[in-house]
Length: 425
Ligand code: SAM
Ligand code: SF4
Ligand code: F3S
Image 1 (cartoon, helix red, strand yellow):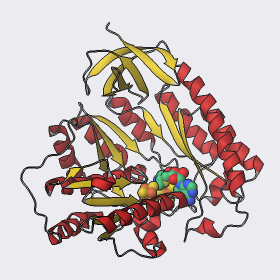
Image 2 (cartoon, rainbow, N blue to C red; image 1 turned 90 degrees about the horizontal axis):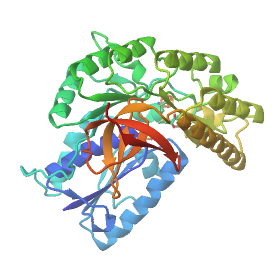
Image 3 (tube, rainbow, N blue to C red; image 1 turned 45 degrees about the vertical axis):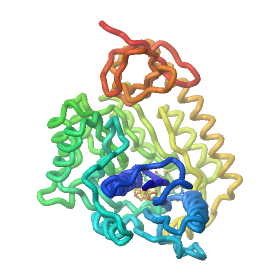
């Protein structure tokens, strides 16, 4: 029995897909790269932009066609956009299982019930196809209470709910035993972790416990909200070299008026101040951000402020998106919506500017010695590794092992990638 899982959206969705994958393995399924070979197809959907919904609807069309030829095929629709998509589909009778992004803790029971109903039984001979355990994704907080005016996530994923520290530590025990090398802590706003727990715990407090208890595991976290970022996190990072010096801090915009309309809770000056503080702790820190272009009311001047922002900060990477009207969000009804052509022009300008900045930014790495963790390999003996700042580096060697650590000297940039040679002192 073969399964094909199609995931759209963020790491939270990737994590949810993993929960389903784990179940399918337990019920004796194996994965396939070809949906036409599959006995089970799942599309785990995202609603953050209209484009993500269109992607899912178009894939469901393929699933419906396959099911016509193979009526025993099981089709599952899961994730943030499930309800929106069901409303949009004219015929959804070929879909066997629907589950949204709320009530994740109920997924195991609901999903097992479906598999049992379809005549599948749990097997002892679980054969996962993962040979190397590298990154364990671990949500620490579900939901979002920030209610940015453009964003549909809080309506689909519900209120914030922190996972108890003891549960998280037991998950880390399992990850360490299974040989995972790094753990990515997830949440829409990890900085809000723990205020709903009794006794309460801060994100910095949790990070200290985790990184201190598991010094052999490298930790990373996504996403930090600039309005709630706590300087204690930097102190914890300073005390624990096993936390990546990488900060994903979505700025969303560089114009104060737009930031206010977005309900982001900070000004661009406060954002700059935070970046300066981070760099005073970690001068080589890797910085990435999310930016939206074409938010309602964005004038040329306001867009220019976003360009100024990326020039000032000199991010390593940006994720830019054209504003997409989301049903039920306040910004849907804002006046002065921006034409699609203008949004396209602006995003191209932004991406071009960032290309240049990334190039300049990469140059400061040449001649640096660093400790790399080897994360993967291509067919031509090019290994890939990550620095402590989570910069990806390519290294040519016959003898490296995935998961090992190596000292390396970054020697050049080739096609935008940092290239290193193994280095021993
Ligand atoms: N919680 C994170 C934060 O506060 O930045 C991000 C989560 S959101 C799922 C991922 C990104 O999608 C956001 O950072 C934002 O840039 C983008 N996004 C959200 N709603 C959007 C919309 N309506 N149109 C375009 N991009 C959007
Ligand atoms: Fe959406 Fe804002 Fe919550 Fe991020 S913080 S998920 S952008 S509402
Ligand atoms: Fe993620 Fe998309 Fe849902 S970005 S939280 S999968 S709407």
